[in-house]
Amino acid sequence: MKIIKPPALRPGDMVGVVAPAAAVDSVGLERGAAAISDLGYRVKLSPHVLDRAGIFAGEDILRARELTAFFHDPEVKAVFGARGGYGTGRLLPLLDFVELARAPKIFVGFSDATFLLNALVDYSHIVSFHGPMVAMDLARGLSSRGLAHLQALLGGALGFELGAIEALRPGIAEGQLIGGCLSVIVAMMATPWQPVFDGRILFLEDTGEKAYRIDRMLVQMRQAGVFDRVAGIIFGALRPVAENAQEQALIAEFVGEQTAGLKCPVLFGVEAGHGTENLTLPLGTMVRLDSKLRRMTVIEAAVS
Image (cartoon, rainbow, N blue to C red; front, side, top):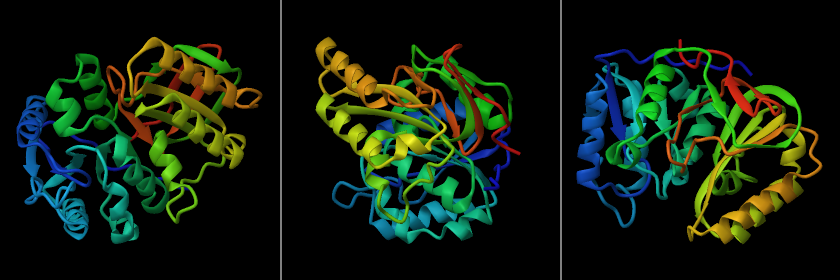
């Protein structure tokens, strides 16, 4: 599959902020927008970014229209999600992914935005960016390393390497990177938006889940044949709902069990997603996994 690389983000460019999921806190949004400005970009908020409709940031159709409008707005060079939570998956049937492909742009988000990130890769064939949300990570203060990584990647830098804590299965593999929040990837399975897994490098992370739920989702993916179809797997943070050593150890045990015997390389513990730094990952680009080096390397530019 040929992938479209969106234009690079340059200093002074306009970043559009949309809310495709849960309702957004105005204070967090303001702080996150200020953080984007501090990086040298201008900020444009979607007109209804602070709307509320129940738990959502406005009605589904309105959120879908505002996302589409920013893709077609010539002034906006990149689109950042305001926050995750829940609600992005409800937009997928309302979006025209062929139309979005005619105006390819950087889209940045994670967590619940995993729905949109992978749909953009598979149905618009656009590189998308698993990275910080405006009213969440950026509002709280992303690490200097995380900010530098985000800005360099969106600007077209090459040669990114992300280290992992542990190699669970040996090997070297290359493939297009896909994935994101484990619970969202599982929710996309057996739907029209299920990611294409074959021959790809699958990234998985999550937060706020009990260890047995993590295991149940991994069991489902393995029994569905996903782990036999991918070229490699890399795990980010898998943070339990209760931050305690026993629960974290149980998650690590389950990950080991569900990846045992796989013939592809498996790495655990990259700093992306709901971790301490949330380093940005370019989904749809070619990456290399090396278990011996415990490293994932992005081997092509993510933007044009």
